[in-house]
Length: 118
Image 1 (cartoon, rainbow, N blue to C red):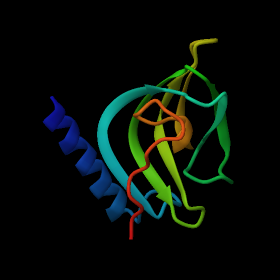
Image 2 (spheres, one colour):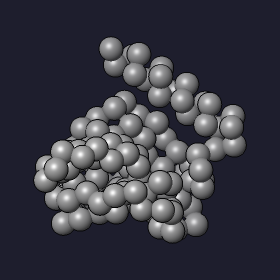
Image 3 (cartoon, rainbow, N blue to C red):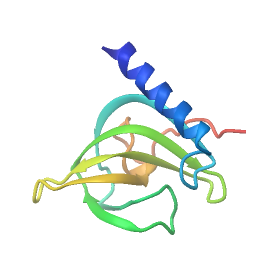
Image 4 (cartoon, one colour):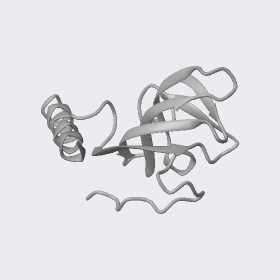
């Protein structure tokens, strides 16, 4: 099952690179789908991995996140996590990018970040 997820993630990344990259992100890394929770009191969920991108919702501490990708925005020197947040308060699902420190697979804040791409 994990091998299928890896193959799907690799294919998705290859398609994104072939199409000119992921939105405004300089580098994106695909990983197996994983689960975590929001570790900040609140985090803005954005349409693209950028501090100026449109906010599509807000996630709150202990809301569940199913993530499938990380993106590094070189101009901002910031890592983002892409995934779907399920809010505890109303059950709403919100898909988008959030600051990595608030939604990371280690469930700690601050999180150990992936190495910065060259």
